[in-house]
Structure formats: structure tokens, C-alpha cells
Image (cartoon, rainbow, N blue to C red; front, side, top):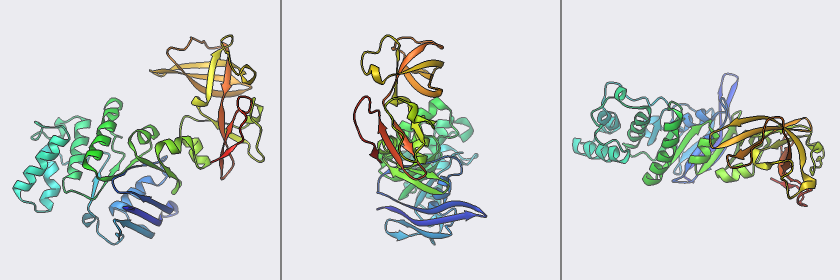
Length: 353
């Protein structure tokens, strides 16, 4: 493994920012550190960079323990969410800064900077200053500056946080493509699960200073390993009386469940052709336009569920009585998560995750 964190602990006063953190990262991977605010993800990033010191545990990069190695000797590039560009330096000089610190020759600096300017698609803007750039252009310059000294590892702290939604969407694809082309092991922090799912090769989910789960975006989404992940990932509705729904038996000592929109199908009352006996009767409470789809709130046995419908689906209205099929749900106790399939539709036993 290229990056390893072994039993890392870090406290700020009474606050436990990292609590026995352990994980490994393969070389060349793009990893998303995902979690809510205060979950410890940025502290992990800063400890790897050498900007914070762990209270205990080992940080290992390429087989070498780096706890006592100064930040400027770790061979790590860091991209900050606020860009941290030098205001009175041009694009060229901002990118060249790390190379000048390394005392590279003028020829080497010029060649490397021009190579990176071409890579990030900002040819012709070399003499501009940060205030003359858009947010997306600034982030590209910050990315190039971090890459200029040829670091072994790239760290990005919420790299899209200061950028508007449309540009952020474009930069996600750009960043993933750039890192694949460069081939550098990278870790980025985000609280946006859509961002992590779209960009990362693997996701590490943090909560209260602990690592909850690590895996590919698909694996984590389809197989949440802990109750926290089941509730955190996806657009989840938490219910406490799932036994009232058709096809779901209450597991012993497990009262709560999570239902995602993709687990639900809503049909007009007279249009359902299959699994009629499994369908619940629901009342449409609210319909919200979300651009490419409609979000529907439907009440079933005093439970408010969230489902989605495409723009091509037959129109339904608020107050309308509809047929609601619930295919599956996650149930959980304090420690474990289980997937339950609707046994009225298909006879399956619960699957332990």
C-alpha cells in the first residue's frame, strides 16, 4: 500500500478529531474523504500533509514513516479550498513558486510551467493575475501550482467549495481526468456525497473522528456497512414502524429502517399491472420539480416517503390516491445494517451486510 494510517489519534482539548483511524490507499488511486462537518476528515488530511501532528499512531507513505518529517520535505502537494494564490503574482509566477523554492534553473521552470499551463487549458493567460481569473480558472492554477514540484501525493481540501454549481460540475470531470493523466495518488476532502461518488475511485466515510467504511462508490452506496452510512449515503427517509408496511417483518430488537427513493415506485391507482397485492395505497403530499425529475412526497400509513418520477411518467397531482410499491429497505440497530426485500414480491431472506 502507498499510504497507510495506523491507529491515528488526535484531540483538540476535549474534542476527539481522530479516534483510532486506520486505512490504506493504493498507489495511483483518487480517494474521497467524505463525512459531515466535524467528522475529522480535514484533520486527517492536515496530518498527512504535516500541518498537524497526530497524538499517536503512524503515518506511512511508500513504506516510510513520516510523522517526524517536516511538511516541506514530505513531497506532498496541497490544494486549498480558497485557492491561496499569491495576489500580486501572475499565473506563471504562481505555478513557478514551488520550483523556485527548489532552486530549479530558469529553463527547467519555464518548461515545467508551460507544460502545466497547457495541461490545465489556460494557454494565453500566463500573465494574468488572480483577480483577472474566474473561480474555475483560479482552481486550475492552484492545481497546477501543487503539481509543479512533482509531488508523490496530492491532497485537496474541499477543492470545489468556493466555486458556483455549474462550474463545480465541470471541474469534477476535469479533475478526475487530470489526475488519471498525471497518475498521482490523490486524496480530496468533501462533505458532498454526489461529488465523492462521481469523482473518487474509493470513498472513506468519517464520522465523529472514526472511519465508518471504505470502498468503491458503488459498494458503499449499495452495501452500507454501518447504520450511519445507511442514513448518510443517498436520499434516505428514516422510519420507525416499517412493520406496518406490506411484505416486511420486524426483525427482533430492530425498529428503525431507511428507505431510499429508488426503492419505491409510484403508479396511478388504475395503472398498476403487477404486484397488485404488494402495493400500498398512498396519498401524494407534495411534488417538487428538480430539473430532470420530479421529487414526490407520498403518505403511506402515516409514513411520509420520498420517491422520484421521470418527466415522461404519467402526471400525478397533490392529493391524488396512488399505488406505492416498496421493493426493499435497510433496517438497523446500533451496530449492524440489514437489507430486507419485500417478501410479498419475492421470497428472500434478509441479507447481512
